[in-house]
Length: 142
Length: 142
DNA sequence: GTATCAGGTGAAAATGATTTTCATTATCAG
DNA sequence: CTGATAATGAAAATCATTTTCACCTGATAC
Ligand SMILES: [Mn+2]
Ligand SMILES: [Mn+2]
Ligand SMILES: [Zn+2]
Ligand SMILES: [Zn+2]
Image (cartoon, each protein chain N blue to C red):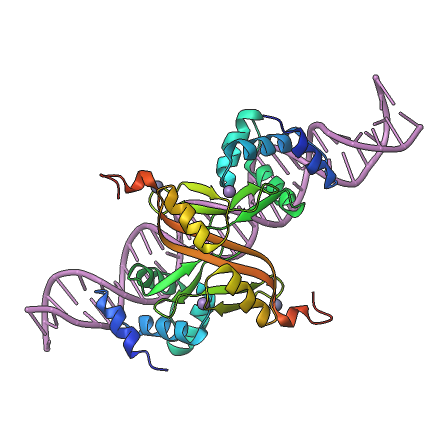
């Protein structure tokens, strides 16, 4: 798997490119949809043995700040991470086995149709908007 | 604030109605949109001093199982809780100050319009579907 | 009303995910 | 090639949440 373009994007953030960061990037690419830090660690260890879990967390945080990675919380308290920059998408989370699938449309009706089309039985959904409230958009706010 | 109807619903779940549970219910009613366990604890303590945080967690879990309360994860790892049974709704989460507002429509376009109408600047959204994947709907699975 | 006892509570300790600290190592601009 | 400094790993700290366990109390039966 070719990590060169990702490596370039990561370096553009200003940081150094190390073997461990490359391993995390590759693991993210290989794992695909929303793995946990632990899962990323396990996979990245195959590429760079001795890689510490702490480094994985730090790396993910760094990448997240550079916009290379997004952290998301689905149902449980553990964070999940995925590479940004692909097409915008959402997820189908199975309440029974926990598998996560990607969905590339993002409107409710279309999404539900898409979910049903792949045999997924939708029982609930979550939809949140993030941004800045009126007060925080006022001068002197950030 | 009248907690009687909630008390009735809670008892319907089969459990006992204690002063601490009543305090948690009242705190949930008073706090409104998606408070954390800690916030609920602080508020409920005004009603029933000596109430332990552990009891708050246990109570919320119990209520969640009875469908009286819903736990959700927004941006961070801490769980947030809110009374169910009101109309289905979503949230506007301010990235700057963290305030959470309710939104009662749930379709993307309408939601974004509603958000804009209240001066909220949307920069991102999250939308997830939960349910059962094809594999888990097959016989012998649950 | 009073006894009964399973369900509920609180304090402390355990857990699990994530973050911080700090001494050591390695990247890369010059 | 070398030095400045960013990154790493191990251990310890932190934070939210859960578990344990001895004690308490609400709800039903008498
Ligand atoms: Mn995905
Ligand atoms: Mn709400
Ligand atoms: Zn499944
Ligand atoms: Zn705000």
